[in-house]
Image (cartoon, rainbow, N blue to C red; front, side):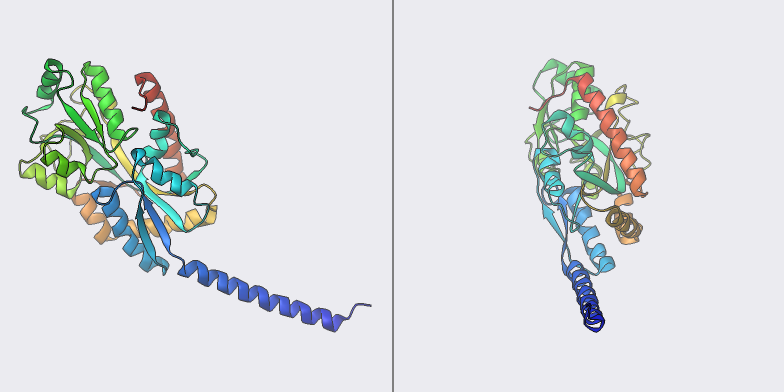
Length: 325
């Protein structure tokens, strides 16, 4: 015969244990650090922005937030780490190219549309084509003249094989029928000092305060911009579309991704917090002053953008016959 008093006691004890476990689980989750993986080297626009976000997110979430750099393969090494995290304590902050472009160029260890989950778009950034001290011309037309006169004489650095800059370069090479040599990096941070040191002739780099300063000082020469229209802060710089290269007229979108196994609730919660942080003047003003455009939105809006860019980039890569080097 069932002892109801004993049964009731066991139920009460179980309820206490469950409540205690839930409290400990919440405490552990709150005390566990949130890691933001940056799939590029230290320094540069992605790393600097991620570190600015980390400080504000820590205050909002009440838990430590750390940034981990994992550069290489056009951002795919770092994003593979995010895809394989299988937890809700890891995010990636990146240009979308390792998700929407690089997988069309190189073999990946992750399925970009299944193993990674869009969380929040932060901004889109114009792409500058700039000449370093080694570039002796004055504009885009001079660049093409030199490239035709001396095949392989010009070299151009990008953030890596399969990066947006790589795709833009291939569009220019293909349409102009020139051969500007690709110099892939693990990110943009080292590109700027190497450009000043004459390691290559040209580079495709995102708009940032340091690059803008070097252009203003005459140490870098702005030849063209990837942007829907001329930039208010750079009215003399033509867009690639104006120059007759609409397929190279691209911008970089930057945002946060979670592992594909993360819950909808986690992604929605992080989207809300990230959008709140992105609106803070400490975060938004330095980015917009550098001519970047803030682009907050929902999880669903970012996910749709990622799916659309993935499909569009696949068509462009196939048509241009771009392959890993």
